[in-house]
Length: 409
Ligand SMILES: Cc1ncc(COP(=O)(O)O)c(C=O)c1O
Image 1 (cartoon, rainbow, N blue to C red):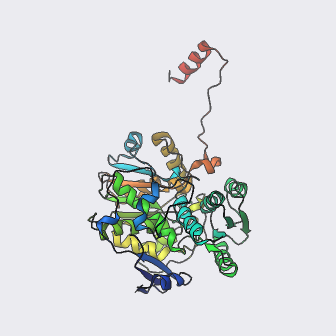
Image 2 (image 1 turned 90 degrees about the vertical axis):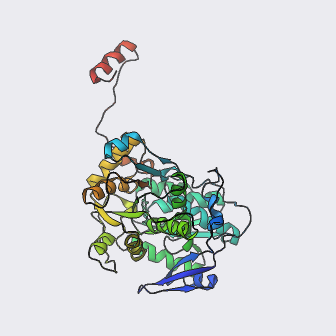
Image 3 (image 1 turned 120 degrees about the vertical axis):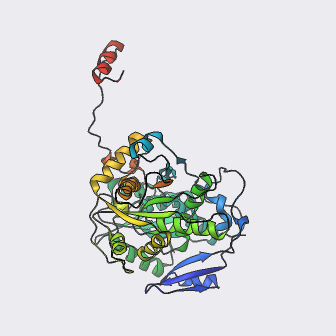
């Protein structure tokens, strides 16, 4: 059974210790990062063929007591695709896209939301709260509606309008914080503590990493139980990347995988605090003022920055930063060459792949997975192709002439 047996607790000054008493470790989640540990063995990893269970397929490696899963939305089990057009466009013959836009609200945040709400259902929490740049909030609002829970969400005042509309539409209580995301995060933590809410905050609640690690299990299984050479992922607060790292570490600990992939973290040029620390070989991440169109990775003071640095260093990978123009271009290429509709932060891994190749962190011949984390459908204002439709009278001849004019019939 996959009940955690210990936890590593990492304090702000970087010191860590292993704690045998999991409840005691969880009580420290307020002041330290808590990473749950299991009694690893091959049997914890499912051996039956891939099925419809999604993320719950890995429940022996999730902190869940026995009993049926009652969280009602499907989660995980997202496709790993190998689009020929994208392989051609990138020149990478061994490239895969892990398409995390397929969750119930179109982002990888649906995994952590599901696990936190499953626990809230079991433990009887009535209110679940978080701070978010947008996607966590939509995910929690919709998930809470499905689970019959109340969601209280703290967002920066410049939150993407459609994302805000969706959270409100799903019935969440939404608090806009004028000073921005970092302040929203702080306030939401204080409020959760003061009012006894279940705190879903990313990187704080250890369940968020537990859920996010399942994407590594899926990649490994979908690649025929093999590890790719590298995985490229966008980095805002850091838990998406830290979750990947934990997932691959656990596969090794279970004795079913032999090595880690190199992890390549992608930040925006206008918000690259972790990449800067990596370049400077520093252990501290210095906060910056974010400026990028990619709201999901516009995090100036990342909550899991130090852990993301550690994980990338341990994997032998690195960080790259990409411009807003590169993000827009990556979105266009993902749409036209792979049929994957990504928002700016969601497309960062493709832009980062190209940048990593350019700066020698990756080789085109390697087996690489890029993580596409969020859908364009929630940010339609970026769907600007500069192209125009063909307009015709409803007549086949007119259509033929118009298409001939395009040279595409
Ligand atoms: C689409 C998208 N990609 C990437 C990220 C970054 O994830 P993390 O904060 O776990 O680093 C986010 C975070 O909100 C996001 O919304």
